[in-house]
Image (cartoon, rainbow, N blue to C red; front, side, top):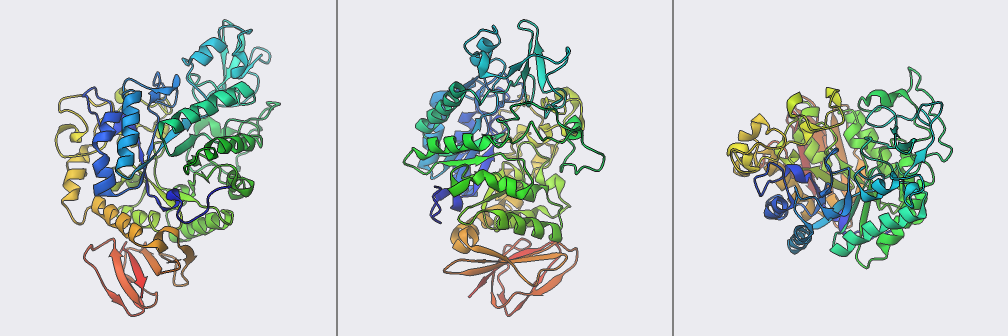
Length: 536
């Protein structure tokens, strides 16, 4: 059973996602690397004040999907370092009080992985059944399943005259999780990194591994069928009944949980679950909390950005989290348009306050603390295989290099080097060095919020209750622990608003870092201002 104490480290933590290729280039080869991450640990633990890092893949890879196509799960790609550097990063992070979780890419491998090379070498290969191979249907793929990246989920192998399944790129063949040898081999991967010292895993595509054993065709989506929060191209043309979240996947997560619980320390598993039916999403906690510690919670990121929608989503998620369970929240990652670009001007400060004060563990995406925006990447500089020919799907614009200073290349790497993705032109103003010196910067807003959260148990582990003074454009909620009560108020309006929240001390404002008011009952908020009130 999950550890449910309020002292559990991941309940109290603020996580920070690092996309290593874009964080810091220590050797001038145009790509970020693990040594670069090590060089910025003081910023993360000290200046910013986060508690835990999530490292996107740094494993050996042909880089067809920039690290999510893995050719060796237990080695580091030379672009980013080696195993000794990975070990040093984990140890250095721990010495500074930072926990480290890593991506556990569980659904597939690269087609260059030795397992797949052996599997495709012959129909009689001992590893043939480590992947999903099928005969076609009248010269066509075995069924009508479509890849997340569009096109059939099956590719034909001329040598063996069979089709192999891939949920994503044809370069990313699906592992056969119905084969016990695959299960044990992949659990050994988890043990390898746990033995190396990592504190847990972000489980990639955690709902994808198990599909319909009969491999039935998906029905076409009718015109009025609800569409996802973003355009997925051809993938949206079907109702994904049979290639998505088969019930058997829960047994895999129970067994993975047994692997992580075998370690004496508190190991976290947070799974990428792109499911928006809340009861089904919550089923990934498992009975008696025997599956994921937390399914990743994307509901806030996909909600309409207005008070009624946000309030409804937050209340619905918290209602569906099992009693004794814990959730997380995020507003950005490596697959989504940058937060500051998605929101109306000026609202990223409200978003930071919301993310860091609702009940649950916040996950920040690198650069969002600076207000970094989506970059328009020209076709000749594009790297992302998804949306390479469909601009609205490209993820490149959210993965551009981190801005460290106003020096050439934003301090990401040596001046004069050509970075793997272009530097955003606004780096002169939006960078760590400049923003640290500006008390009113987005970075200093995040720093103050993280410090406030650490100082107040009500904001970390307290209960959540929407305040009756909330309205159509003002969202207020109460956070309460055994020792204190706090009220958070966010004004989404373009005009001043005043609401009654009771007596207290105003201890935080998104608009004025110096604002410290005694509240007699009513609090006035400027346009797009958020405040935190401590009741004394």
